Amino acid sequence: MKCISLAVLAATALVACSTAPAEPRLRGLEKYAGDPRLGPETRSVCFASSIDGFSLNERETVVLQEGRDQYMVEVTAGCTDLEYAESIAVDSHGGCLTPGDSIIVAPTLGDAFGSSRCLIREIREWNPKAGKPAGTAGENPA
Image (cartoon, rainbow, N blue to C red):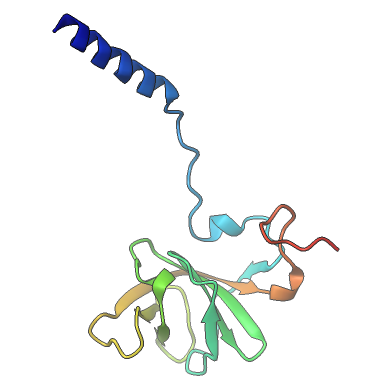
C-alpha cells in the first residue's frame, strides 16, 4: 500500500511540474493587433439593410461586406454560433449598424428556431488588400 501511495504521489508531482502556465488566449479583435488589414474604429456603418456577404467568422468576430466596403465586427462573448454561421442578419436601430446593435446568426440555412442574437461590441474598417502580417500561416512570400 505504501508503494502505491508513493507511486501516485510521484505521478502527481510529475504532472504538476510538466504543466506550464498557459499563455493568455487572444480574443476578438485582440487577435488582429498589428494586422495591417484592421483599420480604425467606426461608430456607425450605414449599409445595414444591404449586406452582400460575410467572411472570417470566428467565435467573436466576423467581417461584413457591402460592395467593396468591409468591416470587422466584434461581438460580446457568448455568441457561440457565430463561427459556424451559415447565414447572418443584422438588427439595427435607425438603418445604421452601431455598437449595441445585434447580429442574428443561424448555424444552418433556414433554421429560424436555432438562431442566436449577438450584441455588437466594436466595428472596425477592414482592408483585405493590405495583406496579412508577417509570420501569418499560409503567407506567400513576395
